[in-house]
Image (cartoon, rainbow, N blue to C red; front, side, top):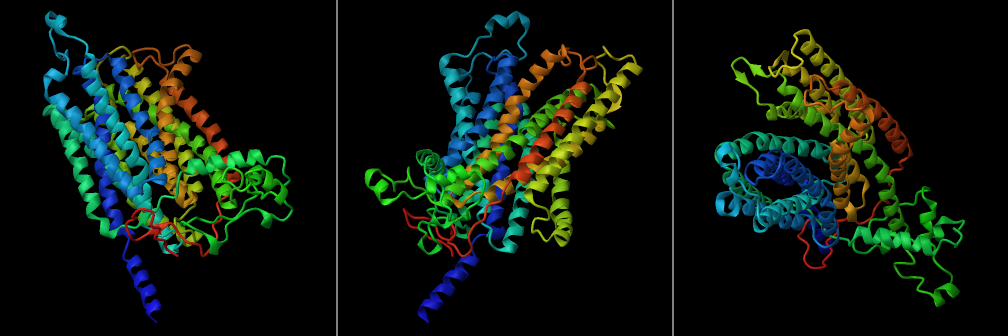
Length: 582
């Protein structure tokens, strides 16, 4: 009886952990982190050119490198999170690194001795006073910038999956809440982005860069405090070791056993049974794809075992370990098929601002600043996310029986279709804008065209919906499909899609300009062929969607065994203690 009471007590304690209450802390921290990071992403060009005396080209390239590095380094943060630290500890550690980066840039912005004499608004007669930043000043600058990139990368990798850990995937109600969690995570990220591109950017322009960096440092510091305040409500993951190491072991073992025949009875392949699982290992059923990797799980006979290290981790792996490798291999085509959509997003964000500068941006006596145009899709996202989560999903759930309304791959596919539509609409709107310029003889005029900037709202609305569906669908899909020991890695793979999308955007423009003979080579947008460029992006997006359909139809969902031990604990992990939930 005492044992039964203890089991019931542990179950009741576990039910009090996690859930929406715990996720609220993650929502707010994600919003604060995005507010600080995005504000620097959209405004550092001004700081580099106006205060560090970088050329415009060098300023733009530095910002691009900063943004891309932050997304790519999420792989490093994911490695540490899955291998050595819990996701909670990773969030705290990398947030501290961010605080140091913002503080370092704030100190440099405050003390003029740490910066070159600024050339911003300097009269031509004093141009000789302008100077390039010396090695020490550049060291402080790049040190602060890349401390921010490193810190943000770890938070990006660990925070979304840490919030998702608060919901039980195996519970149907928990599954529905998990899908809703990613919707609301994007909602708070959008709020943070809006505050970053408006409030924080305004503070930097009007109160000084030292104030801007200082507020970001304090805000991220408060987010650490807020995250630690919820410790009593969290469910914690236990690191399972490096997923990259386990994948490497499968590849090496499969190569070593390449000459061994696969057994006729698949039960002869090496697998840890449910009752033998240790350290919260997730047991996954075998799939028929990539049978060549199954050779890593072939046990050698006694004679072979006596002459080689046949039972080591580099010679013999479990089927669950092999299937984990198969999941990663199956995921790669899915993520590759979304890179071009992010390339289109980067183009849309860049050229839309240039289009808006030629259009009427006035609302009665107020004129919308061109750099603030991205606020339009952000406002729309704030409206669409609750509509999707509270109206569409419950209705779709009644017809499909799926907790998330539609499956993640279907959601991503709809988003890719809408991205094609948005590119086509962008081409139509740009054709209309150019025709207005021709009709009013304003092709070479710097004056605003008699055409409202809200015409751009059509493409923004469609692409914002596409982003809601695709980005959240990717986060949900990769978290659900990845094993318990590689949740952070799966989040990092999602962010890498954004990184490669931004990196390839400039390559796409250069290639199109060279092949087309200069569609976008003029400084005058009214003489460029931006509408042709949008039509080309739409056509390539159609081909990309076809590639995605092939990848999605080919993908096989993982099949975890029932009644296995899970990876989440209601207690903080101490040392190597493994607190598991059955």
